[in-house]
Image 1 (tube, protein in one colour):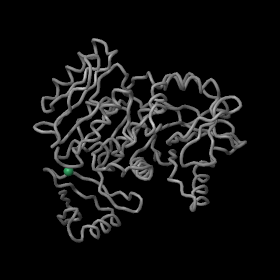
Image 2 (cartoon, helix red, strand yellow):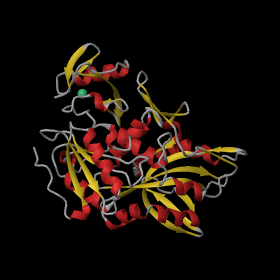
Image 3 (cartoon, helix red, strand yellow):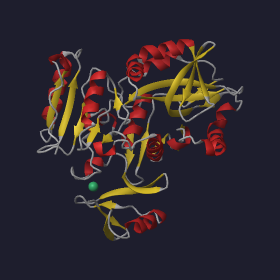
Length: 400
Ligand SMILES: [Zn+2]
C-alpha cells in the first residue's frame, strides 16, 4: 500500500476520497510526497491519457525504499550512471532533466541527403558528456517506466500506454533551455474515426519542417515503431505505425549503412512475430513536402515493449517476464557493447535485491574484470551471472 502526503493530508491510494484529493492537488499544482521513507520523497502528478497518476521525478528512484513501487535500482549498474551530471543534469527544484546531445537538431542548407558518417558513429561512441540518439531513446524508455515489468501486466501494455508514458516523461526534459517536447514527435495511437483531427495535430507539429528556409533548418526528433522499410526508387521509404499516409525517405547508402549497424536489431525483429522495432531519428523536410531522415538509431523490444540487444538477452528477458515479482531492465545508453551492465535487476528478490548479468560468448578478459568490480562495489545486491559460453541459462531465483 502506498501512502502519500497530499497537500497536508496523509492518504493511501486505495483510500476513500483519494481520487478527489488527487484531482485537487493536480489543479493546484501541489507536489505529493511519498511516505515510504524519511525524509519523504517529492513526486509529481501526471495526466496519463485522462488518468491522474503519481510519478517520480527524473532519477529520484534511488531515494525510495526498495519495497516502494517507485524505487529504482542504482543507476551505476546500467549505462545511466556515467551520464549523470554530464549529459544529463538534474534541476531538483524544477524536477526537470537538462540534456546534452551529440547529434544536431539543426542542419545547414536544404536537407536533401543523409550524412552517412554522422550516422555511423552513433553506435560506437562512448561519451559521458553527451547523449547519443540511442542514449536519448534509452533515457525516454527508462524515465517512462517502460523498463519495469511484472507478469501481472501481461496483455496490458500497448502503444497507447507506451505513447502516453513517453510523452509524459519528455515533458520533464529540456535541451538547450528548450522543452524537449517541442522538438519531439511521437505518433499518437491512430483511430480511423479520429483521423482528421489526428492528421491536423500531426501537420501542426511537423509542418514547419517543410517550410522553405535558407540557412539553418530545424530538425525534429521522431520516435515511433517501424512498420516496414518499403522499396523506393533509390533507397527506402520508412513506414511508421500509427502514421498512415506518412513516409520518410532514406537514401540507398544510408539504408545500407543502417542494415550494417543495426543488423542484430533487424534480425531480432524479423525472427520474432511478437517483437517491435523502435526507431529514433532526426527528421527534416524539403519544401517539396518530402520528409527525410537525418540520423537514426534502432532498438528492438519484446512483445511487452522491453528492450533487448541480442538473442541471449531476449531469452533472459522473456523468462524473467513470467515472474510475478517486479523486474527492471537495464539499458546500455552510451556504453560500448564490450562493457558489462546489469541486464536485469529484481528489486524485490529476497533476501537481497538481485542484479542479473549476462556475459556474451565473445566477451573479452576485461569484461570479467569490470563485472567483478561492479559486483564488489555493491555488497547490498545479490548477483546472478549467465556466462553464455558455459552453456544454458542458470535457474532463475524462485518466485516469491
Ligand atoms: Zn516511495
